[in-house]
Image 1 (cartoon, rainbow, N blue to C red):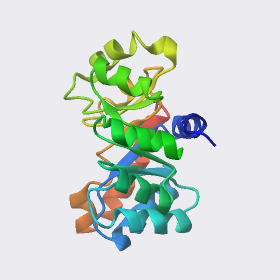
Image 2: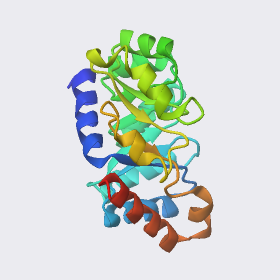
Image 3: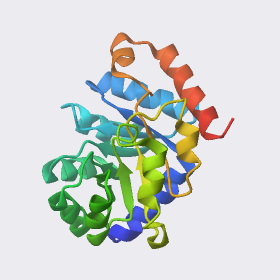
Image 4: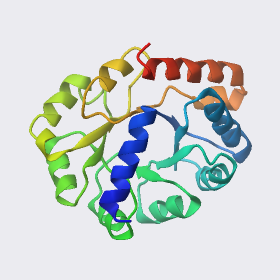
Length: 218
């Protein structure tokens, strides 16, 4: 399957899920516990960031243990991590910024990948390399929904789609999801590192359940 078709498949699947938890996970045990909660509570996706050494092993184990979870890899900053993520079982990958080398490798390898953008110039460069699914980051710091709508306007006829991440919260998530070109948002408020480290699983479970309600527009 080509890069374009795989990316379209990701857009379709994430479009059903709407809120993708963005997770920084330090060990396999807590990582799998977090994935278990997501699966149980009806939020079947996770962006497991490559900010820790455990990321690859967690994706590999979770892909086997929770086949219903749509697993992605985040903070992909080099081509080595890109390949490791997909070898481990990631369905998609995203990055905070636009690195042409990583994009070209993803396209050549047929890896569904969304580079990070926050300016029209970055959107055009990414689209020129074949990307139509982009991460808008850091969403709130870059101007929030007002900025995102302004960026979308000149390109919407070309079918570009976005996943805003960074500063999206329970207070503004529905505002982002109301934008037609937004496939899903990155939920950095779900499964916070401090709560995971402290084993606050009941608190995390309630936060995930709240997110499920929010994505359904309730």
